[in-house]
Structures are given as structure tokens and as C-alpha cells.
Image 1 (spheres, rainbow, N blue to C red):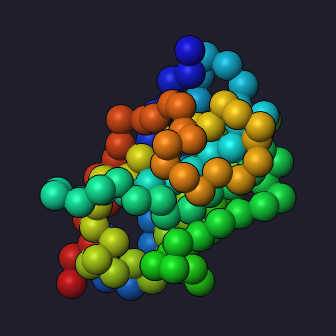
Image 2: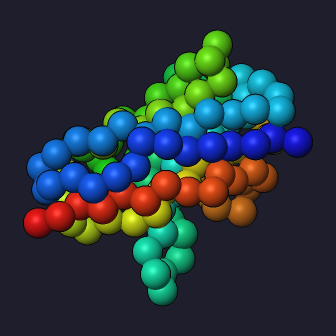
Image 3: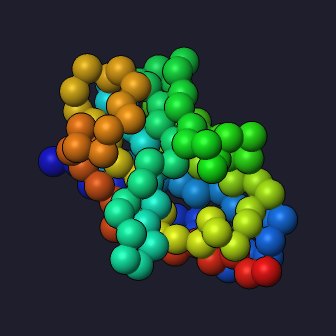
Length: 125
């Protein structure tokens, strides 16, 4: 069983930056595709960014392009999301997730097998 624990969330002013981390335990994630999702009350959980097993391929939602960077350190079993130029509309609970399938980029929420508990990101205007 895989456990995912996010950290790095918090309160930041608009225009600021945060770096989210997702530490995994239970097994190595080096063969898994990974993703960051976010959710606000009353809305569906949406994909923000995804990365394949090696880190060689990435995907970003339009809302994240040019501002967020997803990366991974397989040696540390950790996933990251660098968020710059944050906006109030980025306020959400952010979740990391792992897809135990082929390791290829996964942009469909239903492909993900393991989820963290989430970390709150609040951007003030």
C-alpha cells in the first residue's frame, strides 16, 4: 500500500509563491505516473499538473501553464509542485496522486489509484 503525504501549503499573498511536496511511503513511486489535483467546495477535483514516471513528460492545465512547475525526485520518492505568481483563484485544497499503471502521463482523474489527504493553499488578494 502506498501512502502519500502533502506539505507546503499555507497562506500567501497574490503574486507570491509556494512549493508543495508530496512524500511517498510504502513502496517506491519511481515507476508510477503522478499528478497534482485541486478542489474547492462544491466543485469537482481537477487536474493541475501531471508527470510521467521519469519526469520526461509533463502536462499542465491551462490555468497552471507558465506559472506552475511539476517535478519529481525518484531517489527521494517525492513529488513537487512549484507555484509562482499565485492568484486568489488558485485557492483550493491540493492533492497529490499516483497512478500505478504503465507510468505514462495520466491526465484522467479515474486513472489514479492513490491519493494524499490534501494541503490547503489560500491566496489572499
